[in-house]
Length: 357
Ligand code: ADP
Image (cartoon, rainbow, N blue to C red; front, side, top):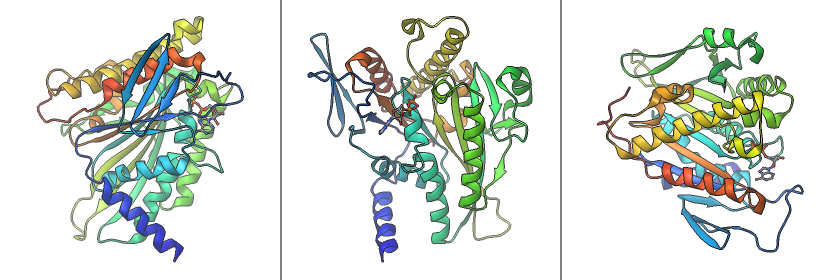
């Protein structure tokens, strides 16, 4: 009985927003206060259902969103709103889900979560296999790849012998981004594993996460200086056995920290890493802004990140950007930067008129 009411609830949510045609949806999540944050009487960030207000130096700035998750929102609340976009992926659309924000605002918590509070990726895997178990007329098969983009180089996280970051030349040479005549992006050399069931999917995902974090001194470093991309390829087999399966890509991306590096006083390697992240984030912002304008050049080539995602950002794709912000006064400058990035990203309309490079 419990399962049936859960299924009904799921279906209701799915029906509510199944048709997210051609628009980028932008959500904002405000991280709760942590013991490390210094609390002030006057807190700078306040949120409502679809807007965030930031008060700083006597001014008041308001930012609108498709949805805002306040500090008390939990992982289930977030996933409830992400679920419909998964249905789009099963329906054959390419989908990108991004976690954007300053380091420490909860991007990895949202995407990956914890054992007790799983995030979007583990829940998405569960949901995909749940949909399969519902057994409608078409059947699905899934495969998974995971990669890290670090300093403009790609690193395969599921390879049997993953290249170390010190061995970036190898990592770069082995993975080649190609676009086929139909516009589909292929990453040559990237490991793609079949995931026949949820247990296998979880096993590979855990492996990829471990490979990523163990090569860094600490977890925070990994999430601040590199982008982590999980790709699920969904093949939908129709009733006719001879028909070719319909293939779509579901990307779930934990982006590197968006903080402005010069302000943090970083030097040397850390500064270079920060610059690489900032460049690729602004390249992503430029692509999204160009898509919003609907006409003109779309500068996909300016970063590895946008090259990889080229076929999953534009025409017919669904994009969900989850912007993460801190509630504290200390971070108010970065918070305004993140909210401004989000404002630029909102209301993108996909269009066939776009020339590509
Ligand atoms: P980022 O990936 O943006 O650098 P993290 O996901 O590592 O940030 O989050 C920083 C810290 O804040 C972690 O200890 C994380 O567990 C905690 N945290 C972030 N968001 C939440 C949340 N919504 N609820 C509880 N703890 C959170």
